[in-house]
Length: 80
Image (cartoon, rainbow, N blue to C red; front, side):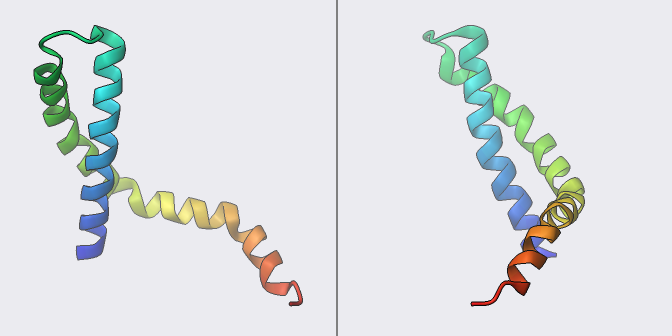
């Protein structure tokens, strides 16, 4: 559980930080108030992203394993 919480927090932090920077820049351009606007967007986005990442993390992991299972099984049966 601790690993799942930390993983969701770190992933949501990185993605929220980068995505809010990008979207703020796309929408408003570089201006003297950019940093304040970006940090405001980030502070709103990070908690939501953390909850979403924690909630859907197991389903996404299960889906990725399902999508890769034919590849994984093929690699397991391949002789060295």
